[in-house]
Length: 260
Image (cartoon, rainbow, N blue to C red; front, side, top):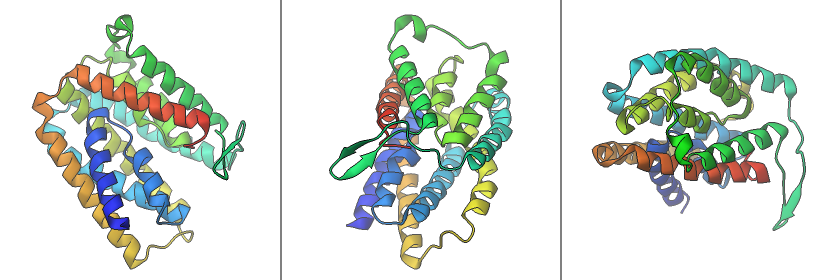
């Protein structure tokens, strides 16, 4: 049952998030938490996330806009590291408010509340005609990389805001997806050493853990491969709706404290 659930979740999340540019880790982490201690679950999710982005990058790099990748992605790397450093200095920030359901206590952190509200606002704006017609001048790409990279390092949620920004760059659906994947690879690779250092001595993978991570990774590869085969049938309008729906759902979950 554990392998079946992990595989199904990985295939579905990878397929869906190929189009949106974010959400794999958000959707997969709750599944891993069912079977792993929290540190192992976080490490396992990060491993699948990185490997899946590398796989998608190998499939799609030819369709990327390399100018956007470099101008947006390179500033995001030091910004993500800075955000991760700030998070380490802040420590575990308590929730703004708490509520209980089914014997569990939930509540958003200050950063999670702010990011969640922003995601809801951007999601609602994506359904406004005037907002969809806006375009982001490419001279602002480095600023977008800095902002989303820093927030990603601070909260772990950078993909949604990155996708919302990239939707305004005038890329078609295929270029939007491929460009977002390669930017995610840059950020993932840059954060890996910091993450590994912070986890050293705190968690150890057993043989079963490695088998589950391997199954999840292969399933995510399958979802990404299926998604890549359908790109020619995807329009930017469809991508916008996927991004908006996921941003609204994840943002609401963060505001409620279901996701931190």
